[in-house]
Amino acid sequence: MEHVVIVGNGIAGVTAARHIRKNSDKKITIISAESDHFFSRTALMYVYMGHMRFKDLKPYEDQFWSKNNINLKNAFVERVDTDTQTLHLAQGETITYDTLILATGSIPAKYGWEGQDLNGVQGLVSKQDLELLEKNAPNNEVCPKAVIVGGGLIGVELAEMLHTRKIEVTMLVREHAFWSGVLPDGEAEMISRHIKNHGIDLRCGAELDKILDDGRGNVSGIITKKGEQIDCKLVGVTTGVKPQIEFLKDSKIETDRGILVNRMLETNIKNVYAIGDCAQQREAIGLRKPVEAVWYTGRMMGETVAQTICGKPFEYNPGNWFNSAKFFDIEYQTYGWVFSTKNKKDYEQHLHWKHPDDTKCMTIAFHKDTREFLGINSFGIRLRHEVLDRWLNEKRDVRYVIKNLKEANFNPEFYRRYESEIQKEFKV
Image 1 (cartoon, rainbow, N blue to C red):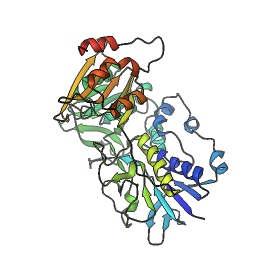
Image 2: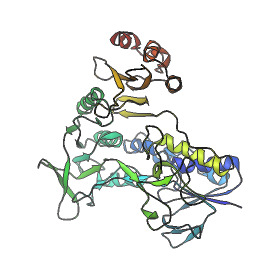
Image 3: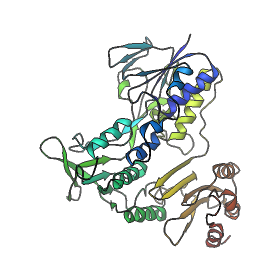
Image 4: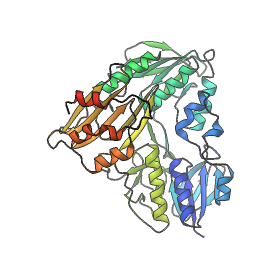
């Protein structure tokens, strides 16, 4: 019987296992050193905030895996020998495979700061990070002050988490506004104000220089590149993530930033695949980045590779870009491409509307010559995925999109509608 071994039990690896089982009776083993069972990583923040228990993060009952004849092994893979098709585990054991799927995810990216390995310096990616946060910042007596280095989605989540325990938070963001490398200036500035309004000391144009040692190997503070010292007990590193591929350094599997794959998610080694955060497309798909640490693309890669392994090969095609997040009280959705002010394409034009209450806004991107709808960002107004995806595929005129915004609105009954105000602003 063919043995499929999957390294990593995140959304990519588990999706691959589920779909292989649906389509075959192959032997399946999932290896992970992070947790015994799959859990919803995007909900980790709610455990710390007291809204959920860790066991509530598991979408499947523990017996689901044995019931579906999927073997789980809690172990760390130290080395991959593709010549003998053998995985060498930290415990000294070995496991052989016929087909190998690497779904090892990502880890926080650090940039060689002095003091970055001190106790009290951490990211927020794994279950172990959550456990470490409980140790480092259980309350505001043990940790009265924290500094978060970097913005982005993980940074704002960590700020909200710490804020719920009344821990004072300073955020260092090197851009002129929060996430302005991704968002147009109007949106980035609105979110910056919203974060500050929640009591977070957001400092834009500020960068970390070094992390200070208290003399016992613990964090005592940081110094910015402007020479300012900020005392703290916790330094949250949220300057992005990088693929977790260190264990492959002596293997024959080709890597760059991530594990290099083609459109079939195949590596350079026969019967070895890579999916999820650790995979890097040899050629970027459209305007997408070669490495995408996004939940839904990991799920799609898992489905794709499962079909290929089960004899129905097809290329990975993630379709139109989309994503969603929450910045404290403001929900965010994006469909298609809306680039930041500094990264905007030459042909790209924006229409921007903001509500006077400073908690809702919308930016619509279109081609300035053809008027083709390119993308939309929405804050505080929920939109229907299927409608926006269809309009992007149909290459609709931006005027059509604005006139038909009501069709895309996904807010529940009794929510106030803003389509007429937006249409008035855009003179359509």
